[in-house]
Every structure is written in C-alpha cells, then in structure tokens.
Length: 502
Image (cartoon, rainbow, N blue to C red; front, side, top):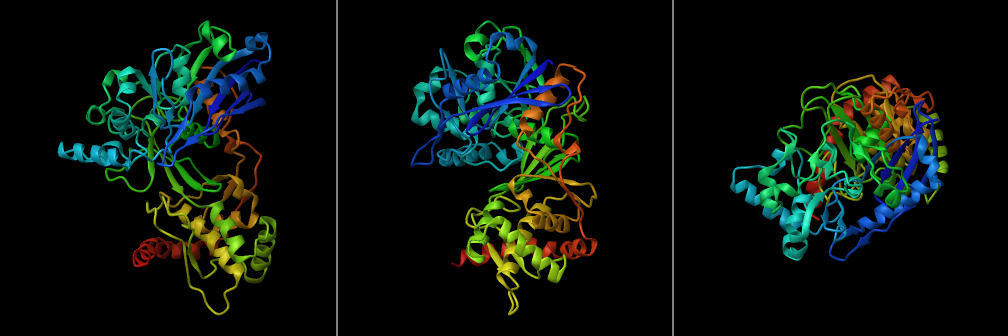
C-alpha cells in the first residue's frame, strides 16, 4: 500500500515511520545523534549528524531503492528554535540549540535597543524572550565568530529546515517554529524587521515562511538518492515544528483542542482561536498555520499555547524517594489505592507546589522551590505523596480557559498511574483519557502531508481512536478541588516571598 514517509528529527534522534492512508503506522526506525555541551552553557549539535541519522533511519525502512516507489511524500518535522547558519558547501558551524544559554547578555542588549525604539520585544513576539531566542544567539555570533556571520548565505531554525535546504528546496520555516525564535511579529505573522535589525540579521538571510499547517515545498531532485536514499520526484511537505506536529497528532489543531503531558517534566497544550495576549505571561504562544485541520482558510490562524511545568514525573519520583522510602511507582499506587479506600476521593487537605526544580508555569521563577502547607498531627507520608500529585494536577488545571466537560487527553509515562489519573480528573473536573503519544509527531506529519496533497485518508489524531483508558471525575471531589484553586495559585507568590528571605 502506498505510504507517507514521516520523519521527526527530535532532540536526540531521527525517527522515521511509514504511515498508510488508512492510519496504520507500519515499520519504524531511528538513529541517534549526540549533543555537545560546554561549561559556559553551550548546547550544540552537528547538522551533518542530523542528515546522517535521517539517512540511516530512512534506509533501514527502505532497504532497496525499489521500496521508494510506493512512497507518496516525505513529511518532516523536528526540534525548534535552533540557530543554523547555511554557508557555501555546508553549514560551516554547529547548530546552536534552543537549550543554549550563552546569549543572556545579548538578549538584554537586544531588549534595551528595541525599548529605545519604543518596541516591547515580548509584546511584539507574544512571548517572554531570553537567552534561548535565536535573535540573541545571532547577535552573540557577531561577537564570537564574525567570520561565520559573513559567510552565512541563509539561516534556518532547526533540523527540518536544514534538511529541506540540503535537498535543494530553499530555506523555509513553518510559523510554529518561527514563533519560537524571538523574530516573528505575532500580529502580522511575518519576520520582524526591527528585531532582525537589532540582532544584526540581514533580511535576505531569513527563510521564507509557510502559511499552512502542512505545506508542499516541492519535489526531491537527483541529489536525494545520495543524501537520503530517496528517489527523485518525491513530494516534500513541511508540517509545523515538533510542538505543533505533536499536538496535531494527539488532538488535532482545531481551536478548543487540548492535552496534557506527564513525563519527567510536563505541559499543558491548548489550541486557541485568538492571538496571544498583549501582555505575555508564563505560557509560550506559538503560531499555527491556516488551512486544514479545522483552521479555516482565512485570517492569521489560531495559536498554540504551551504551559510548561519543570517537574511532573520528577516531582513524583522525588516524593517516592523522600517520603515513601524509595518505593516503586506500582508500590506507591498500591498505597494510594489503600488511602482512597479509607478516605474516598477528594482533596488531601494539603496544598503542595511541585516546583522542586524552579518553575515555568503558572509563574516563571527559576529560584522557586516546592512547598507543602496544611500538615497536621494525622498527616502521613502517603498523604504528602498524594498532595504532591495533586499539586501537579492543580498546575495543569491553572491552564484552563474556562469550564468544559470535554475529555482531557493525557500522554506520557505518568499515565501508567491509575490513582494519579483519578486525581487529575477530580482536580480539573474533566474526564481524562490516556493516549500513547510516542508516535504523535509522526502521526502529525502524516496528517499534514495527506491534507497538503489533497489525499483521501482515514488518518486520525491519536485521541480520536478507540484505544486508551478513560477516567471520570467524582463530582463532589471536583467541586472541592475547584474551591481550592485560588489558594493553590496564591501559594506560588507566598513560596517565592518566603524563598527570597532564605
């Protein structure tokens, strides 16, 4: 059966899959690449490693050249907010990753220069800007490697853009990735001339912007065989960057869709019909393209809001070790089940902040630390553990736009805990439904490509499928938790104030 070749160039590996138009995800393969970290906060990868890993993964799927005859398209996404300078004959330098923190001084200089022109960098971009901004990274390169800046012929912002460029299809960037760079004007969804000028980034170096949630860029040429083991003439589609592709693959990109992720860290992702607020808060706001997936064909398109928690599973891991003597997750769940059998569902009577590593949402405070209040003579270790799980659930619930009874899709390793799912259902007041999101970005690539090419298909977001477990909220427990939400939100400020006195 003809298949879409979907490629996700993530933070540590290239992952490829063949996905049929009936939604079947067939063979998969992956290949890792290293990250080089430096003592001064640098985080870099070799773009050549991206290409080699992509070729390795693809050729594992397509061991013979004839296997490419049944391919409908190559659809590729990947990590966002990386600064990649394309020079004659290659990039000429490592890619500077989104996690690189060396451009802090340049970010402040850029902010001050724009402010002197009457421009708020945060308001213009719809996000709080810092050293991770590609604009700040480029300004830093002017200081540390001006020769490289002079040799640059194009700039792209991640491995997907680099691979498209290597395929000879030009320099492109999707709006979701662009919104993460600190260079996109969120009101016009175009590159900001004042920010680029302040960064020392000449406008001709910037890539062209796509405008749909999946855009056909062209077809592979003869070089694709040597580069990736692919035939010439294969359509190439650029979906949103990994955050958008993952959201598309889990719930779709129609306004109102949302999901939560419970890994070591966590986040809440919501598709909003409106543009970012005029005063950016702790959430990240990323542009989504117009076109299919319920977006409509007119207007600027909706916004993807991501509210990131620095500790979700990490907070649970810490609590099991510190409070429960290092019991396994299954052992902790058994204790939670016993506690629920004794006390029923509902608040523990404690309020806990899970911010053991600092926080990104609902406040941005790298120095914030966790807290628990309400401890009494009958409080036991399992109560404190349950309170920590409640704290993560409250942090997720702070991202609610308003009352809704729609199920909340949840993915990540934390979904293995049935008691935690009940806590989240009760705290949010919504039914929760587990989703195996391991292939979400690849499914998003397939959806974007099928729609961009106008193909009839039965590919569905993962949350729309019949598999997965569902947990309903307990009405009384949900009402009790809802009453506690303002107090939990106030605890962030109180903990910060106490922390400042330490």
